[in-house]
Length: 163
Image 1 (cartoon, one colour):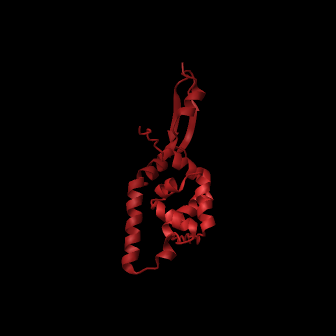
Image 2 (cartoon, one colour; image 1 turned 45 degrees about the vertical axis):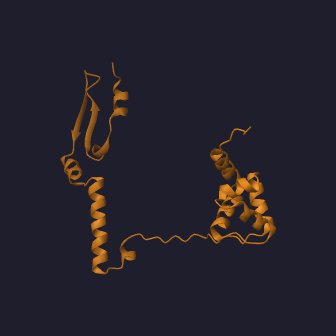
Image 3 (cartoon, helix red, strand yellow; image 1 turned 90 degrees about the horizontal axis):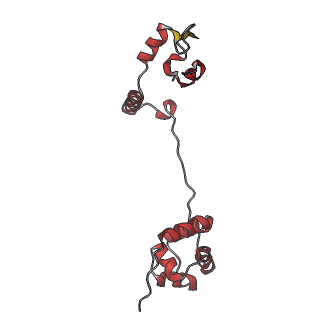
């Protein structure tokens, strides 16, 4: 037998919450509920658009504002996000530091960065500087070495020794 109090816990209130004038357990039948619903709440719920309709309505209002030349920042929430991702200028010592954070050879570091072994060697000797993309990648490695060590290990596939 269902406990009436437990039954109340399983009722999804949804639009009824504000519309219930009366909710009580009926005498005599422990599983029956007597509910009196405010008709205004039912009508308000029927008039409330579903999520899809609200999205379309919002996009239509946005399109109308753009077409009319209205200042959209006055009517809509607009955010501008600027990332501070200026790459570090890498010295030979910083390149070695980034590689040592992973604990890998020049060859594996080069493969992980997507550059040649010669490029890593030239960076570590100070003959050339890493390009901005390689520098940004090394910035990320140096900022969170444990994450990148894990990512490196996930991508490592040992080869069988050739005889």
